[in-house]
Image 1 (spheres, rainbow, N blue to C red):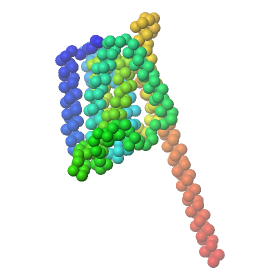
Image 2: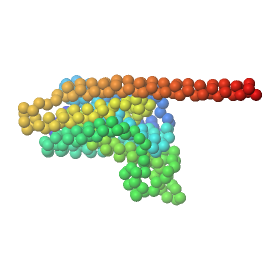
Image 3: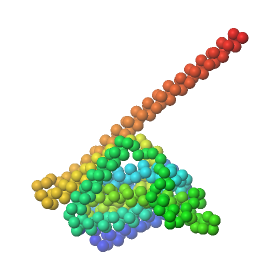
Image 4: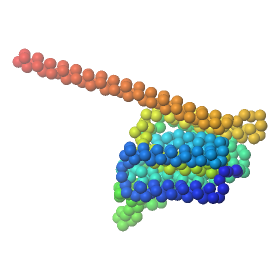
Length: 349
């Protein structure tokens, strides 16, 4: 499978990601609650970095690889927002203290990077060996799009029962678990025995969740580009920026009420692109969706659902405020009637 990267570029890129990971580990060695300013600064850094990388790809290797990287990154970033909904529920379900949340996310993201690399290698090998893999990936994305659409209609923001999670049940069978946090430690001693703390269990749950997300995330990027180097780069940049994005958007996620619909459309478009690409290889008359058209459609959908989400959220808050004022006014009227009745009784006596 063709790629823009030679051995040297692979080594330099992987070394650069290793440095970013080391910096993250160093900066989070002392647990602390992440403020909005810190989250905004790191989010800006992890947006500027891939954009700069994409500009370099465009200048050094041409327009097509540059557009493919940019499109793949936008897809990964938009899918990451859906990941954040689940992470928010998981960290709340495990009652992770604010100062430890970035550490849990970092552990989960590091594990996800390794697993994504394995998935990408397997996906690239499958695409190289079997042309119908494009069809399989396209059908997987179509099925995922239907599921995301149904979740968006029914709502999937309910509480998480961590005791019923498969990853947690599996851990309980292998090692003892404790329900008490022990600072940033992942392993502690209880009654003379080693036991995993909720911090470690939460990290495993985040990792397991990302494995599920990788089932649609990796094929989605392969729907944009078949270059394994660009696929890995888009996944790595999106995952590394996920921790800062969580703290930046945690308060705003609930307002993106239509995001699920947008993601369903995006996955369906990329799935169609993959199916048409497979069919074009068999029947050349079948048209394909150009990457630039796919990018325009993805950006347009994201802008549209963001606008409609914010308008719907604003309308909902207005209705809730009006209901609160109405109930407050009714309560004050009841109090006024009670005071008037009390004064009347006093005057009668």
